[in-house]
Length: 461
Image (cartoon, rainbow, N blue to C red; front, side):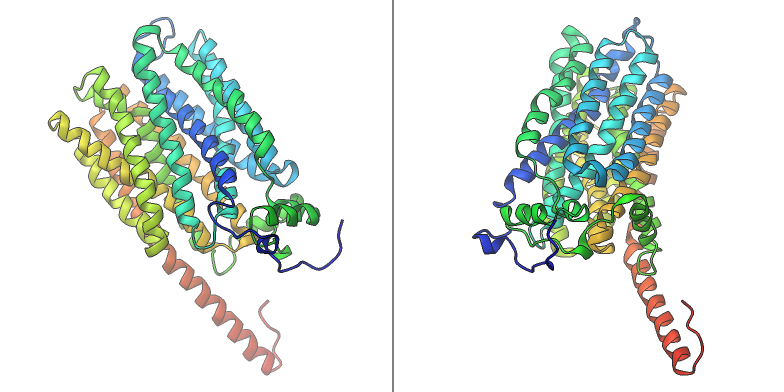
């Protein structure tokens, strides 16, 4: 291991500049991984009406909501576990393991003869899905060109919705004639397609390598992609002690109030994302729309999500991720209420598409906002916890939707989505104020300690 001091040299010294072109392969592979994530998450909602109509499976609206919560509970565990093993296994290995898990989980679902085994398969898939998203987000934020973090995050998340559209297309094309099981077999494709590509071309994080003492490898990867070489202060802390220190760092004076606000905003956003992904077709069907139209709404809302990510990323780079997220949450609330009104079909399609523009990117901009709250060394831990704690919203959304439908109160589902949008807007809008209060408190404490030191009194810390 090299013991020389860190060099300020960047990839420019090797003839490369840090741009989208220099990191294209990393962004493309991350995009592919999240594409399969979106496909797997949305497969359940896309074939839900067909599963409920299958007497051999024995699925009811109540058990369907419970299974949706098992999936997202697995995602919660997966997100937290992935954050704790990344510095041991590395981001590359953890990402590949996550893809293998949800591919195997989809195979279990395709083979399931009853609700219990199907639920176990969705829980296993959830473990893998939960680990994938925070890793890909952390990698993209690390490799993104300077001042392009929000745009890069938005571009990454278009893949989630492209995957959701693919899942809906599979549901429309295959399930009516061949049943829901072949659609889940398509969920095995990530293990066959993405894993070999990641093994061949996906790099390890320079920051993780530096934290493990592998400075030469870290600098070589940074140079290869035109990035600045990582500095020790930017490397995520390793080991159990380091992970605990990283968590405590999220509650330093400058971020101690912003951290819980980001958690609540993520809860609201993921309640919306997974509630809609799981229940939109069935809620629209219960509102009187036909089976084909009800499933098509899921494709339309994801198409809106793709457009929204492109708009939100560019807008946030100009006006700030927090401001964009707050406005997007409010617009989502308005769209959710309109979806509950029985408007003419073509108007409903427009409403669902436009709502998709705001709904998914509101949550993504919460992730992008962590870039402004946490320093480089805390960013991975901060993002992991925002994602992980927010997964409780992903658990509540499908479960609550199932309860409402089981009791014939599906109309309240749209109200639930609207309330989540309003709450998300309020808490994310408070993040800058919380940051300013934290910095003011820090400056006041420092001034007080200086005064005490000048008068011979012991400082407070």
